[in-house]
Length: 118
Image (cartoon, rainbow, N blue to C red; front, side):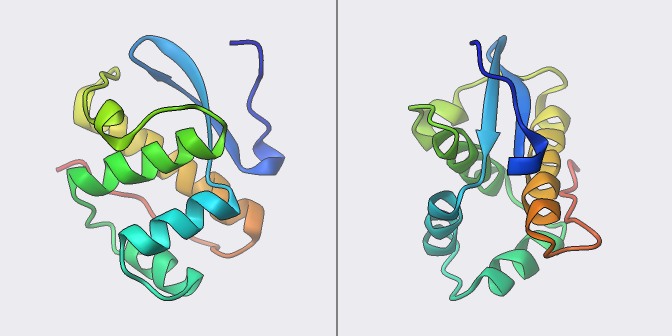
């Protein structure tokens, strides 16, 4: 993969299945998550994420949307079968970094949501 993540655009890099990938929660990816989480606004989405009580399925959806937002062609089912260093803790770390990059770039959260891996 030649492209590098641009943090100013809310992009991050993560190793998924041993491959470096760029993830980004674009406006379309955020709209996808609003629908998936049945919330009616960005504030509702941020509130859900800031609870810190995300399920494994939530991590899959967020990472999947981030991959698709950056132009990767992975379904949520593909993401569910991926491996990352440190297992669940690694998925939680990727999710937290992606949410932080997204909401800091938007200026929407002074304290970005951090999912717990327990």
